[in-house]
Each structure stands twice: as C-alpha cells, then as structure tokens.
Picture 1 (cartoon, one colour):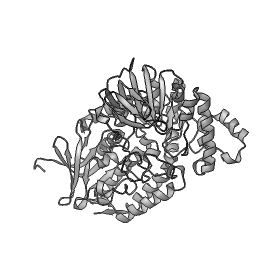
Picture 2: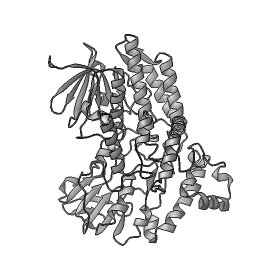
Picture 3: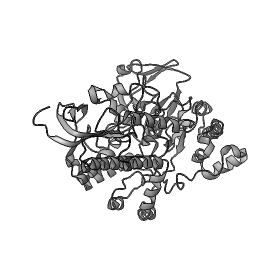
Picture 4: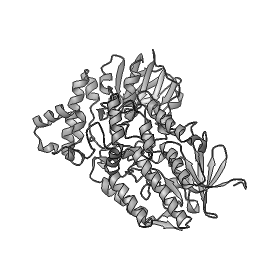
Length: 539
C-alpha cells in the first residue's frame, strides 16, 4: 500500500441502483468514500442488459426510489412495465439530479479486496493496479451481473457474431436478412425472441427446458394514471414495505396479498375455467395451495399447458413448449409480450434439445444429433452466475486471509444477507440470505442501504471501529432461511433454478434468497438494530 493512498471511510463497489443510493446516504453522514464501477456510466444491470425486449417485470412506478418526494414527482413513467431504455434514462436522471457521477470512478474493475488486520482496514485493488484503502467495504455488485457462458464443446470455434444478452452491444443490432440462433429460454430469451423474430430471416430457438411465462399486460400510462400515482406514492410505498415481495402491484391487480379466496383444489373444473376466463392466465398462481401443494400446482400447470395448445398453432411446437416435470413457481416468474405468438411466425423454428441433443458448436453454427444449423449470429441467453457470482469473481479475503470463495465452497452463508462472519466491516447489498431476487429490487436495495448507513452512524456515535457477523448468528440465519423455504415450490426436488445455483456447473445446490417476505425481513433487521445490533460483534 502506497504511503500516498488516502484512507477513506468507505469504498463502494458498483454504481447500479445500490451504489447510486449509497452515495446519497454517505453524503448525509459526511463520510469520505468513493464508488468503483467497471462500466463507463451508471445503471448496473440496465447498463449492461440492452437486449431487444428487455424490460422491468413489475410495475415500474414501484421499481423506483422512494427516498425523495420531489424525485417521485419529477419523473413520468411512460409504460406500466418500462423497457430498458426508459429505466436507464431514469438512472441517468437520478445521477444528473444529484450529481452522483462526481463521486464515481468509472472503468474501474475491482479484482481483489483484502482485510488488513494490522490497522483494521480494507485494501482494494483495481485491474489497473490502483489501490484504495477504507475502513468499510460495501459490495454493491448486484445479484444478476456475471453472465453465464455455457461450456459447450467447440464454443470458441464459431466464426460468426456472438452476443450475450447480459453484455449486449450499446449500438443497435440489425438482424435483417440474418440467420440467428438463440440458446436458452429463460427470461432474457422470452423477452428478446419476439423482438428478434420481427426482422431476422430465420430465428432458431434452441430450447432445453420449456418455461412458464405469463403475459405482461403492459400498456402506456395515461396522464390521469400518472397523476393518480403521484398523489398515492406514500400509500404505495407503505404497501411495498410490508408486503411479501416489496410490491403493491398498483394498477395491476391490487395488493400483492390480495390472493384468491379459495384453493384451486376446492373448485370444480368448470369453476376453475370460469375464473381463468374472468381473471386471466396469471390468476392461476394466486390460489394459496398452488404454491405449497404439488397436486394443486399440477392442476394449475395443466391449465397453463392448455393455454399453450390454444395459442401455438403448430401441434409439434406446442407440445415441445409445454413445461413438464417441474412446478409453476419454482423459478423466478417470467413475463412476456407475444412469446408464444412468435412461434406462429414462419421464420421462427423451435429446436427441442430434448429430442435432438446439442452436440457441439462449430465454425458455421450449431450441430445437433439431427442436423447442422448454420448461423450468422449466435445469441447466448443463458443467464447469470446469480447472487454470488459477482462476489466470488473478486478475490475477497477476510481474517487470516480467508477467501470468500473458499468459505462459500459448500454454498453461501451470511447473516441477513448483509454480512459474512470472518469479514469485518464488509457489507453485501441484497446478498444471499436476503429477499433480493424474490422481491422488488429497489425496495430491497433502499432498505439494505438505509440499514448499512444507520449502522455506520451507530458505530461512529458509540466510538466503535468494527462490526462483524458472529458465526453463530450466521448459522442460525442460514438455518432459518432454509426452514422458511422448505415446503414451497422453490425447493421441490424437481426444481432446477438459478435460485439454487444449478445453472452453474459445480456450484453447490443451496437455496440462496429469503422467502419469508420483505415485510418480515425488514422487521427482523429493524429489531436486530434496535437491540444494539444483536448477533454482530462490535469492537
């Protein structure tokens, strides 16, 4: 460490919505800090994920900051579920309004962070070799920020253009007259397939596992609706903070807690179909027993499959698109605009990899056991190393040189998703063990950043230097996270979701987010802070 390296109070890694809000909080505290960001501007996931069709999967009026009434009044959302350009525009609006960029070091990728026990500070090293020192380290690196590149034989042999949905080019991509192949049918594929199909000469969709996806019901917002929002924001925020998923679902279907008044198993087949016709396809997830009873879930699944058969005209394609063998609700819910309808286009070809296995990628395209598919562009819509990937990608070392990657070799462990035992003064925003990806991310981000800032102020007011999760507290919280998830569709043995890390070869199968709900989690965190940060070692 150079003698000229200035000791800061806080180093924040990441300038997405978490890092941006932390600047607001740290300014209020009067602390010295810097934010290190790999990209060349703000926005986090919305900076990187620019694929066609990318949009928010909850009402965007709720996917927004609540810390400033004037900010809420200053921005007019154009769509119920805004597309990526509008959300990135909102991030830039916030950055401009509060002059956030002056405190961010862009094009600065962090490669290591090591706790220095002699001096009780963090040494942070960037890819350029530049070093930073701080008493506290906040990893605001996001839950979905490290793209997953599947290990397919011959992947590097392909000579055409390769794009990953999570690293989409900043300039528009023209697919006109091109043969395009897209690998994967998760959320980014479901959103991008209808868009790419509009211009591509041929679009080959390479599907391994069919997905459950529900119509977004997106539409442009009227001036009257926007004005109504602005008069009700206080109520909307209160509903968010006490809800299960940080959402009031304002303007869509009432409060999140407004579930069906009867179990699906208690209805006759005719009654189920009548309700489906009245309330729409998403309503089949609202029955209480569908999320906890596999028999009830299968009833909902069969209604869903009938919907696919009705929409998709080609019988073979429809059968290949039917999700089988795993329940609705075990994976993050996908929404779409015209996904199944896209398979009715003559230029869209579904390649069912359960019927013709993918053998390898070669110079010209993809070879399956049935045939060769020559491609001009190959799109990977293969998701992310979720929740832990951005943390373990950095060489983070705590006490006695313990590597975070080593501590988490059998699965991530943390206390509240906020701290890891053995890593003093390091915080993780929406880390494993918190509601994070099961919630409205900005609602959860604000709660985490507020909690961290309050903790820093508490330490300062009480002339304390360190805060560290106790091992026993971490063990108890991990046990609680698993107990709450047990018995839900999220952990059923047939579920192979990225919540469990199964999309990454070699990653241990461990359920990572907290299912107990945003409201209950918020209460946990508040009670722990009120008891003098019970479960943490303060020094």
